Amino acid sequence: MKTGKLLKYSSIALFLVAIVLFIYLVNASKALSYLSKDPKACINCHVMNTSYATWQHSSHARNVTCIECHLPTTGVIDKYLAKMRDGWKHSSAFTMNTFAQRIQISDNAAERVQANCISCHATITGTIRANSDRYHDFSGTVQVDRKCWECHRDVPHGRVRSLTATPNNLGVRELK
Image (tube, rainbow, N blue to C red; front, top):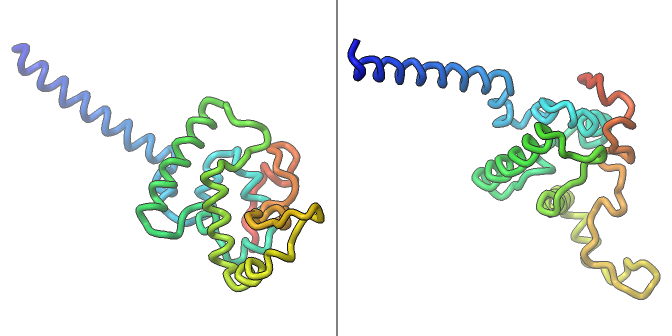
């Protein structure tokens, strides 16, 4: 067999192997589930079971999914860019085991969550902002840029956020 033909067939075989491996990885990692708004996509990584379990027992579980709080609502492109950015950070941290026992929200993600809280609860936040001069910490400093979860600490993930301390965090079940 000539070298040219051997190279051609080897290249085709290598390409087919790469495609099969890619399909296997997409299937094994449940990659297509990340395109949905199904909250179960968030527990493809077992380290998110705590967040899922605490959300599942919250008042938000009835009406709000993970992405409605954690991703931008300004448009599809912004949403998927944030999904890709967060997904890359999460997958590399989880794969390399570099995350802390108590997972902390990033500054960028906190801004998105705050914007979504304000958007969903526009009526009440409008009243609060209109009366912001009345909300203070008794030190004489007006509190204007507070985060919603500074007062609403239990919404929607409860107080315990450690990977090992939340009840039922390993056996995530669907509530009916």
